[in-house]
Length: 625
Ligand code: ADP
Image (cartoon, rainbow, N blue to C red; front, top):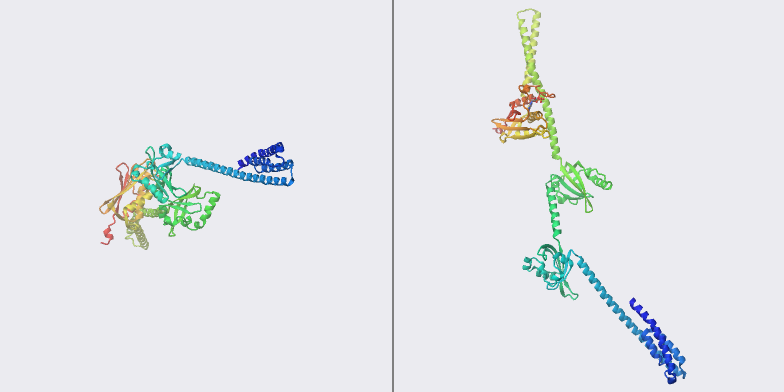
């Protein structure tokens, strides 16, 4: 458009020149021919000048030429005025007609120029778009973009197609696209079937194996689009192919590691729960399901507070908000004991470790949860066992002291009674009031001494019989329970421990706590006898011997010190600086009170073996037969 305007103006100035020039020439010619023409045709010669000016310069020069010519013609003309006026008017009308024609011509010329320019720029625009499209298609190097004609022959091929498939444009143009399929699919006519499907459905999308020029295969994501012209006639196919082999391989790796992680998480004893930063549960492991009694599907999307008893349930939101606001770590990154709530409302102690992760711009918290109920119950059991044993041990120690005292007092008391009786007998034959009183007093003293002796005897009998509460106890369980206390600290001292009780021993009829006290005492003695860190073994064995169970506590220690070996089971026999020397005498009292026997000897491998027997529980008797 601009271009046209400039050209017009450029053409207009010469137009005015032509107007002035041609009018001047016409005037000169008129002047020269005046003798010939006289007053005929006063304007005739000016007409070509107007035509020339309007033809070259258009409306402006045309009008200028008309005005000039009219004026000069009028001035030069002679003759009668009416004739001159009619000639003048005729000239003016004709000249204006010529100018009008010139205007029309100019318009047509302008229109022609404009339409020529428009079609030229449309062609240029189309060319530009085509070249940009070609660039775009070739730039998509990760995509093979190509076109097929209706028969499936390649018509357009981009750089990406060459890169992915290995064929150059020259090699592949005109070839049937079945060369990209594996041979078995070609044999099964899949290429043609794909095209037929694309025609039918408009587009086919699939992921399948394709072949490169060198024969190697790759996993391709393929789109085939049926193309139609504006009249709806089918003209061919557009194909976009992407090599997704690496992507799928990477996905497979991620999937495998995810599966591995899941399997690890499924097997770790800890329950795992993942929540987002608003406390919404997004993952709930199988162990968590067992622990809390909720199914994963029931809790996903719910708030974590569901798993907490009061007051934590109401406060958790504020804990979370405070952490997010201040970053102050109270629970995150630490392990602490808290109370959890099961689906049935019951509560249990748990150990909670929370980790924080930010992935994909999202903050997540992962909680690892270990159920402490069993551990705490076991600790409680050990504590109560310990206190039971301490209590029993104190009682038995008192019993043993009583027994020892009774034993020691019995003889002097008996001797006193005898002496008193003998003294009283010596008074026989003396008959005197004083002597009678003396005899009476000695008689009383003797009977009091006998009474004291009886009390002591009864005490011994009581201690020997013991206040035992016997029950049927499986020996394996009893020994294992005793080992919780008895073996404590053995591993730290490098002592290997073991329990081997024959199955046929079955149960024994005993006071569980007292027999465990015997076992614990023998085990502790064995561990104390072995040098710390020097290795060694401690074995508890049990076998059946007729109606008795025979237990052995064997160690690989230094053996018995000769000075205590002979009086091990006596009270106050000890080689230890802090020792009481009561342990083994208590053991003997207990074992004998159960109708068993206890003794010690050298072990097979140089250490010491303590043996004791206990009556087996006769199940048939228990059944009342
Ligand atoms: P205490 O342990 O207080 O000394 P005990 O009656 O339990 O009292 O033990 C008496 C003594 O028997 C111990 O001081 C120790 O010399 C000896 N003894 C007990 N068990 C063993 C053992 N397994 N190996 C070597 N000596 C032992």
